Image 1 (cartoon, rainbow, N blue to C red):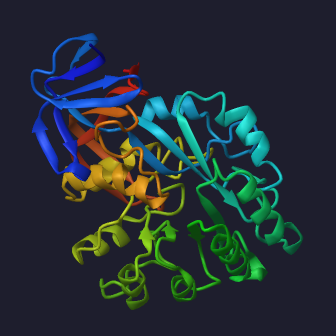
Image 2 (image 1 turned 90 degrees about the vertical axis):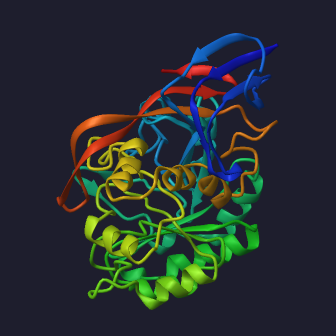
Image 3 (image 1 turned 45 degrees about the horizontal axis):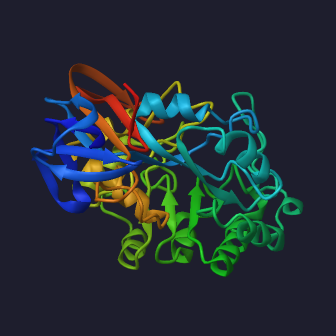
Length: 375
């Protein structure tokens, strides 16, 4: 007998090329079967008329709640956004990753895996009324310490994070990224690069990124946007995708523009990963959560299957996780139950531009570790 069966839902699992009405069974914390007439279970949930997808993975969050000023409560956020895995995008550095593990990651119910910030203190001064870039002070950047902690915490750390730009690295320019890149190479991990306003210019950053590295805020508005003035995609961006750089949305408070997004989509340039960049100053808008960010792409005409792909299996692969992102037999028993909620809605990007739509994606339930968790 199974522990839980979800019956009658439309299952969308892009990794297995599944889009069909089938049941999904869970046992001992894992996916046990997918199909019809699966038999009996200790608990059965009727999800007819709903959409069942692998547990959503938000690749860019800040959930070091209480340990950093920008962190939000991970379990509350996950339940509101339908997520079963949250990837923290460098809230903690080598000086405080241990506290993140002990006081937030281990007690949390939702799965949390962090990028390790190149700055010793992580993102330490991010608030509505205060913002000090962690990569503006060379004294906080010690690659040897970062590498040692990345190796020590190898069961937890999924990559190295660096934030560069006028607001985050200031006079140091691209130097923090060069240092972070060296750590990532020696640790055998992907780099996630945040780019805000210049300096440095986008072209300099794109040239450095390797296959498997992640450019977050990839559809940011001007300046340093991926789209050119004539609506085409910049050549350095196309070259980066060609060599295997991963493009992640990372919406946030100031890092997503409809004009850039529409231009990129018109050129057939879909993001590899959709993520929220939820934190203190974006959770109340314009990002809100993962579902709102996904819904914006639905409003822009991206097929639902591709939105699910960018929010599940592509996110898992970006951080080299092969135990989630799909409802394959024996994998983690995580699933999200969605519904397309009809009715007028207005979405806003990071610079105040708006877009109207007649539907949005809503969460109707979450399965975490093979058990009904929320909904």
